[in-house]
Length: 321
Image (cartoon, rainbow, N blue to C red; front, side, top):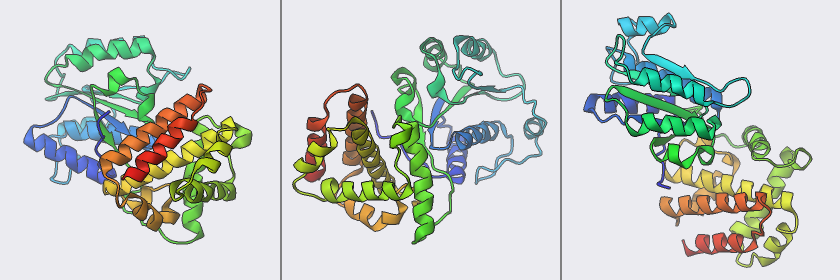
């Protein structure tokens, strides 16, 4: 997997699309990956409207007065199409067939057609295979914008044909020291743990999260001899999952800092100085490799494989710098 670029927040994304429009360098398919599904979908919708505006500003701001913007405001633009998960929680083949039929046609009133597929990780395998036909052979005037909260949940055949864009919200916020920052980070981490399948009775409370995180840093990230800690962790499946999720969230934060992401988007904003120290001697490529290794170890743990050796290998990779 290639390292996906980090585009920052909403303003940065819109400005980047404006630049690509000016230079004629737009790809035909983008996959927006961010932690908030509502914000992901809202951003994809804004990009769709930006692509249709006839008088876009240099900052990627729509003019709101051209005929295209007026159609958008009225909620009836004929060349912007949305696909969302059905009530059952999945996007089925029938919905994607509708995209295929429309994508074969010329735009109705604009220079391009834009299709927004919200929560692309909800595509059924049959729907994903159908969508591939459009991704592989799009018309020159057809663009697809997909969203997801978790890149690894999007089928590889889909994400390999999209330009993956990692985005972050709350742009312009600053991380403040003190308990407010800790509570903010906890409010982000607890749903993260729940979403990743940790048993409801094993999801740590706020104070426990920091105790587990700090124990991980002391006994694994900073430690030279990690064997006692690892041996203890792997005896409990749920404990192993919590450890790996906390570790991947830490590495994710390190990669964000290295990539120039805003501090307000960090899950471990209360330890920002330690994060800087952690990633100081690690390249972005190395951080991403470790991230993928931890994700793989997590998948193995969910399938009841013993992950002691993979965890030791992760530690060795971090030590190699």
